[in-house]
Image (cartoon, rainbow, N blue to C red; front, side, top):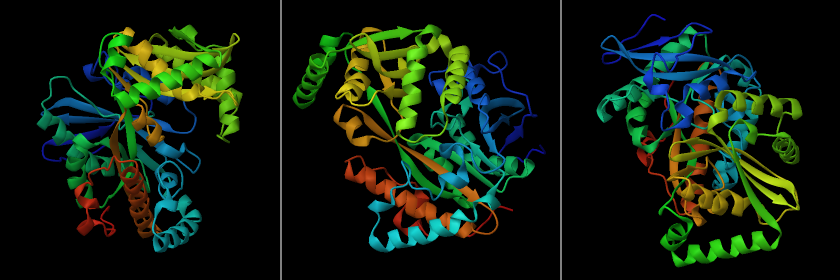
Length: 421
């Protein structure tokens, strides 16, 4: 890459097959956020739906940050990390039924038009990593302002990387509120369109024992917890907790295969086994599996990845017809085990907002910025505006409104002309 200087910060795409290592860059050695861990990036590389490249960010001649780039050569990548698919597709990050009637009609027109235009937006590049996280890992010891300067430089650096890799579209995904305004200022000037992608549910745990935790809750939450735990117990369910590589066994695999089939998700047993094998081999020591058993049979599980004081939910699976298992295992039984084992926070990912708020989670908005080239680019920008509006409305409805980034505020929501050259 011919480096472009952005206020003293330059970006360099590492050669194909090269990756940053924890030995060379301390920011990806045992970070607080599992999605910034070198082991997680190795897991992400093992998918067959994207090629993973890496952006090295330098300032004053030293590496100050690194980030994964998910390169999608043709249609068919994972929805949440494939910019042309993610824009204008109804689902967890677009709820057109919440739009006003004229906007719903326009959404239908746009998505019909985009269905035949998506192939023109490949290859595509997303700065993000699996786990619905931007994946930017900063060098230890960098100040808040220094980190914000890196985030502000990323939209231009991503355009630069997209040009080098011959991409027709790029996106910077899953940025939290603490960095969003800084990114938005530079992204809007570089021709990106901002969209609210959703909000992550994060539960902070108080107390150092189950009794202390329960005592810290509001009366309403204590009543809900006791009822749901009682229903779980009366149904004959019991919780088993395993950790380490052996926690992912054949019973977990079978439940995940059945769960994906029930909801029509792509990939059968071979893909599930490949994914779980990769998690086990790359991050086995960080795996924690909470399972629900009924008469000695596993009927539900949640797989978490652990850092010293935090759990990050990775995936889950539940047998059909087992009432009360999902909510109690995911929120109450998890909290019970967590507070007894030094965990202070649980990250649950996006969606299921009502359930998360009711059980004590804070919703933290996650933003994305998209840039498209050529035919249909204006339609993408308009669809993203409607998509973002629908998610903003969803968070309003659950009582957790997201503060808009500057380019999404009422006077600045018209789609911008293309500026990516």
